View 1 (cartoon, rainbow, N blue to C red):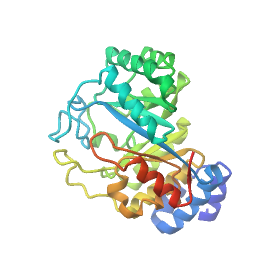
View 2: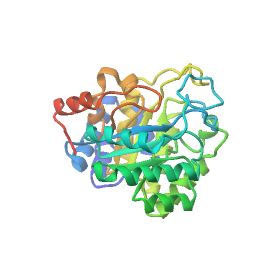
View 3: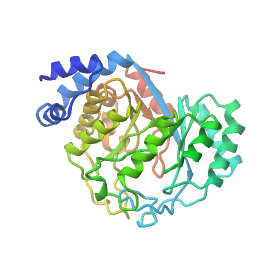
Length: 320
């Protein structure tokens, strides 16, 4: 199939298959892929851009050994360390994020699994602040049991964030304390309970193009509606500290191929975009993205909401 054929199929809602996707990234220029992905984004999302933000509600001393993570207790990175935020502190942070014009605010915690007590603290904060904020509150708490998911749903939390990170084949190269299947089980459990799930990955870990495409196809099969794309910032003190940054062209190709595989899903650009894309950030929308995370990330500084909104408006887009 030609790129034109694939673009037409994507506009009709049919995502690109494995063989065609690999052929595109190997044989098409960044400009060609951007043009195709931009046409698909325009069809499904016009010029509307969604914003989200996150709050690092429990930081550091993580029991997971993810090789990219500055918060892992197995690594030697310099990251902030504190327990789950008390209710007054978390509600204050949520109210601050309400000024950012975001659709969603995610509460993110370190560790493979959040304790029941901390989940109860989170729910207390949600109940306290909900009348005063205008966004949906999301949870990113690692592995969750069915009872945990029921608690969150009962509190009106209807979206979970849980990345698969990379392909099933490559995942053992970046983490040994949790399997890819464990991650998948949490995503499936949340979907089975009727929750929406934000699920994507991290790129620049040393994975191949085949791994990147395989992750997108796994996400497509799950029916995920929001796909975060993160680019590795090689934190000093982690095993991946010497990894080379992705080039802007490779980052834009990743966004574009995800748009062609996942034509009608929200493609959300998150961590690492400032470092990797630099002054080419505006091209992420041309490459097919229709959403981004604004403000700070977990352990690195991001771009202020004011700066992001100005960039979006100056490029001729508007905030959804």
